[in-house]
Length: 134
Image (cartoon, helix red, strand yellow):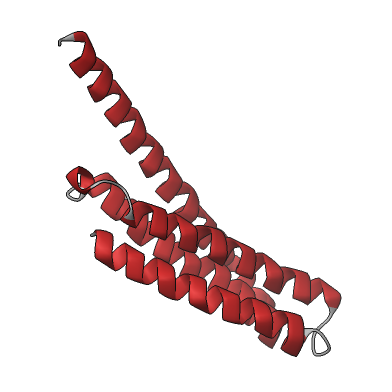
C-alpha cells in the first residue's frame, strides 16, 4: 500500500505543478479570470491531496494492512481525478455541466480525511489502553 500511494502522490504532485504552470502561463490570456480561478482551485486541491497521498505512504510499516488507510488513499486519488479533473476541464473547455462532478470528488476528499481521523483516533485509544495496562 505505501509504495502505490507514494507513486500516485508523486505523479499527482508532478502533474499538479505542470497544471499550475500551464494555468499561470498558457491559460492566463486564453480564459476569463473567473475560469482561471476555477482552474487554480483544481491545482490547489490536487497539490494538497498529492501531499496527503505521500503522507499516507509515510505512515509506519505496522499500519500497512490498515483498510482505513487503504480506502483513504484510494478516495484521495479518486477525489483528485474527479474534483481537480472536472475543474480543469470546466475551465479549459467551459463545460459548465462538469461542475456537477466536482462535489463527488469533494466528498471523496472529505471521506478520506474522515477515515484517516478514525485511524488516528483508534491508534490513540489503543496506545492509551496499552499504557494503562503496562
